[in-house]
Length: 210
Image (cartoon, rainbow, N blue to C red; front, side):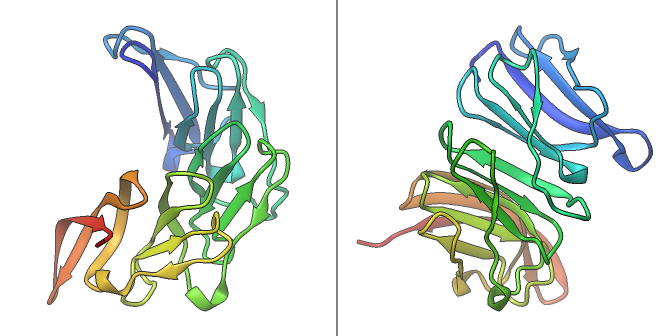
């Protein structure tokens, strides 16, 4: 958020069954537990600004705050059984996405501050669950699948997640764990690269050629 204020999410207990949300106001020197009651394991946090913050997690958990985390409101995906959500990101107050590890659920988008969520997943892409994604605006984004999606690991969208196209040039990459983009022309991904039977860490750079 800034040099003093920040949050971290996670879980504890058997199989991480209990959610954890910690907050710092002194640049990480000390942390206080501000976990909402009855929270499942929390997996991802998205800070839009100092007021608007989103969190997702196990059991289809989606939490939203407009007051720096003093109070949290639950948002419902209305999906049964409840999905294991892996990542959440909002680029502004209204436009956001969340993803599931479950291959039959894939990806969801909202354009009304999380009041309604629309599933965005194409069976033809054979997405074996979404591990992580990153949007630079309301249209352009990239996602990484869990291992098992054939020879491909990264998919790109230019329409807000309605359609996805795998990038075949990353044929040796697997299990992408994180993205960071400066703009839609330059970014990076980290994960694993398969060479013969060995798996090694890899950093990939995405760059459009003009």
